[in-house]
Structures are given as C-alpha cells and as structure tokens.
Image (cartoon, rainbow, N blue to C red):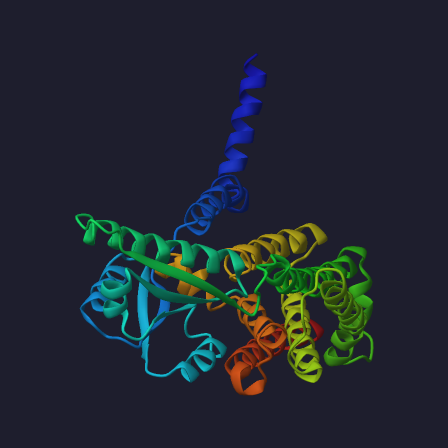
Length: 368
C-alpha cells in the first residue's frame, strides 16, 4: 500500500511540475468557460442603427428617445433622405434603419394609426429578426403606456423589410462562415500536421540538408493544399448557390481574389504553427484550439461581435476569419466590390505577410 501511495505521489509531483499539463488541465477549461459564457448569448446590446424621421414631431422624438435609452441600440446616424439608406447598409455601418412616415403625430391623431418602417440587414437573419422584435416591442410598449387612457385605441404599426435576405434563409449566414471554417482547417491545420509529420519521421532532416531553399520547401509543401482548398471553396460556393440558394451578387473576380488571399493567409499560418510544433499531436492541438474555436466564436460566424464584451471585441480584430466572413457576405449578398471591402483586404494582406515572413524566418533558422 505504501508503494502505491508513493507512486501516486510521484505522479502528482510529475504533473504539477509539467507546465503544459497544468495548462491543459486548468487553463483550457477556464478559457473555454469564459469564451462560451460571454460569447453565446441571445441578447442585443448597443446595436448600431440609423433613423430617418420624415416627421420630427413630439411623438417621434419620444419614441426615438425610448428606443435609444433602452440600452439595446446605439444611434450611428440621422438620415435625411431615403437614398441614404442603401449606401449606409452597404458600408456595414448599421444593422437597422428606422423610418418614421411624414406627418406621424398628425396621422396618429386624425386617423388613429401611424406607420413605422423597420429596415434590417438580413445577411445575418437571426440578428435582424431580434433587432426587429426589440424595436417593435419598444414601440408597442410606448403605445400602450402613452395612450392607455384614450377611449379610441391608437395604433402604431411597425412594418419590417429585410434587405439582402428577404426570406430570412439561415444558409445566407452559415455558408460564408462554413467556408471560412473549412478553408482555415484544411489550409492551416493540414499544412501544419504535414510538416510536423516530416519532423516525426525524420525526413525533414533530409530536406534541411538538401540543396533546396527554404522558400522552395515551403512552396512545395503548400502548393497541393492551395489547389485542394480552392476546389473546396468552389464546391462550397456551388452547393450554397445551387442547393441553398445563396446568391453571388458581386463580381466573381473579386470573390476569387478574396478566397485566394484568405487561403494564402491560412497556409502561412499553418507553416508558422509547424515551425513551433515538433509532433503531429502538438500541431493538431495548436491548430484545433487556436483556430477552430476562434473561427466559430470570435469571427461573427454565429454570434454577433457587437454583443460581446469589449475585451473580446478587441480580440476579434486579430481573428482573420472575421474579416474574411464580413468581406465574403458583402461580395456575395450585397454585391459590393473593392471600394467597400478594401479595409478587409488590406488587413488580410497584412496578416498574410506577417505570418509568411515569420514562417520563412523561423524555417531559415532551422535550415542554417
């Protein structure tokens, strides 16, 4: 019995001395709990909206104050004309525009009813529906409390219009996010595992002493995955369009450029992971934890970034899938071109150059 207890004590000591094991046992569960606890939420907070008030009377001002003081919305712009609505949606500055009809208070007093039009960006249908429900709920609560004592009930009717996805098809949101996830896993994860396998089998040493340059070795490793990832991207876009009806309203050239840029960035990241991973298991762990969870949780793929705490919103800026998914939706669903997505392209280019430069530098160190 004493021998068993001594052996168990030795195992505990071994575990506590291994920092990597401690991180896996205690660090990862805490990080996952914090991420899932803060990210997975159905609440709306500080959603950016614009208001077009054709009437600007006392009633519309009271409704606007009630909407903005609720804590769910943040006023991004006051519009003057109807032709300002489409450009502000294309820029991605707002998720919803609230339009008050002309003579709002007068219509309410004379006819007993007035209309509010709610225009939402339905490229993310779940968020669009929630925004409309929140807006309509606030308006109806205002009507109920403001005109409770009237003998003739007054009615404020909210009409909704969903842009870019009138039928609220969920695939419009999931297809771009799924493409980002698939391309990241195939390009980065498989590349890092392949190079790590060379290290485990000892064949990497042969490559290191060969006449091949570091750039040639890297290009030779990533070229097959570049082609395979392009085929996967084509399959996802084709099935999304034919099976699920996801439109491609923008330029195919812009779409192809965006996909190739994202794949190149993911391949560069996979090479960087391979330079620090000595085994396939380590590469798989780093790729799975560092790429899969952020792609799902912090990219806006499923959960709106605006609903996250500020630290996670800042962290999401360093997640390449966030910029790719946003640009992909703009091209496919809104028909935007480079004039609208150039910030996303610039960020992805900077990330690609950073990962690629760091990877080549580390690889050359090993080669020397």
